[in-house]
Image 1 (cartoon, rainbow, N blue to C red):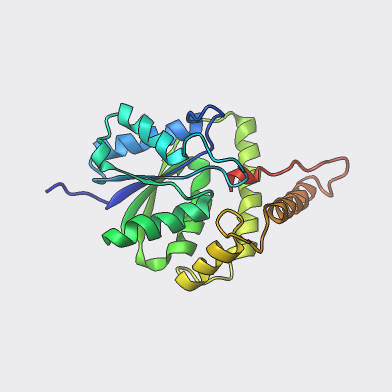
Image 2 (tube, helix red, strand yellow; image 1 turned 135 degrees about the vertical axis):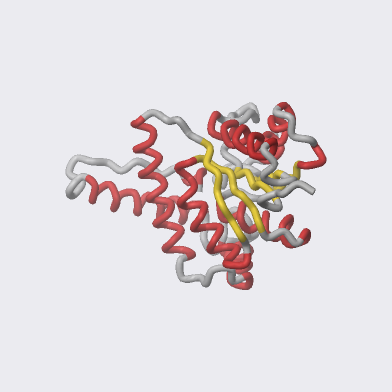
Amino acid sequence: MPNFRADALVVLGRSLNPDGSLSVLGAQRVQRAAALYHAGIAPAVIFTGRCSLMVDEPPVVTEAAAMAAYAATLGLPAERILLEEEARDTVGNAYFVQRRILDPRGWTTIRVVTSDFHIPRTNWVFQKVMGAGYDVSYSPSNSELFATSVALRAREESDIATFLMDWLGALPDGNRVEMDRVIWTEHPGYAERPTLTKADLQQRMNEIAMVHRSTDTGGGRGHRARQVRVAEL
């Protein structure tokens, strides 16, 4: 039998283009996953993602399905591909992959594929959601962004990480009861009547961005904070 290093690769979705095609970053993640699969790292590939959190209309195609379609052109066999199509953010990626795919199969070792800049936050979220019972490692796809884009993304990642730590930091890692409560009663992407609305989330993110930008500019004189892209939460 092959000496696989993980039960599965887990590829995180990224917002799609309006026509349902993959963004450059999304395609890079699939390319990285395909290379790892062909190298024999894992026998299965899980593509996770429905659509961005702030999208109100049903997507033309889910992020997971779009990634799987591209993966097929890179030689990934259909029988080795699994789709998770509920997640609308990184918290959902970890939660639904764990509950819908890993646990029913008894899988505990995964290698997560996402963009290089996204890995620190992804690591924190997966640890918070899954806890110590899972062996999670990461394989970055190179985002190859211009210097200005790198700086912008770093600021956004800092804002989002601050929000998540404020919201979920006090929860014990891997506490299923508490995470169920967050997903099904608080989270605006999944709860029927969430206690945290999308408007609340956007306002909080903008407040965090304002504080961070004010600090960055020595008090913020003449500086206006940009609205954070909550879609990439």
